[in-house]
Length: 346
Image (cartoon, rainbow, N blue to C red):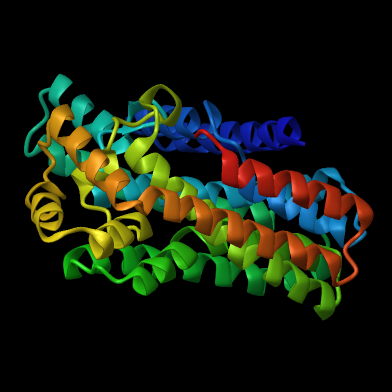
């Protein structure tokens, strides 16, 4: 199914890039940049959860449904591109982030004005384009009018919750919050709901699933979505750059107010807290300083606590599969996806 999703995305993006080319050759770098960003990598978790949500409701696949669920990946592309601008991240998936690639293009062509501002402006617009293309791909998927009408409220909720979560993330960093509860709320809306719960709902509504099954997907999706983001938090601090595509300790340099950091600060001694606060959020943090903060986090037991939270949340998620009339195949695939989402390396 991932291969079929990739084929649908490739066909759509190539057609749309032809249209961009007709506007003018100035848009060629935009076409190349977004096509490469979209197609070079990605686990396609959101379309996969939508697909399994549809199967779990007793639905059958079709080229039209594959195109409809594939549109969710473009929402994710929008989020990633904008996230890198907001976080000041230089890399994504082992390559320069979009704003850095266009900043370099500005410099290479000796264009006027600020290269960094040009790069950020281009990235914001390209992220917006991905969001627009997501809706366009859904609307032109060929699903029936009834399917489209049923799925649109979920699709809209998914986008609103994502943007709300992104704002909460930005606000928490500005607030300097150390609240575990507030950080969990960010994790739920910024990543969890739009990665798992809403895609499941999207797939289910395509085939007219009953409320009982939608509710079961909610009970499965919310705790698993939180566990998914908690794993991401651990990878942002301890992940292997060769697998995450980002420098080691990137979240520490960006000052990300994650649940991991909230737990570490809550458990830290005064001297540990002082050292963390002195370095946390410094974009010029050295590898040695990153290692020092990593050691403090481990010494507080925060990483072990997060691992325990991931296990508890995943168990809670899987227990929801016993209810709600999910098909046998759906239960099997949702169990597999829970393992993929919470044990992933990238």
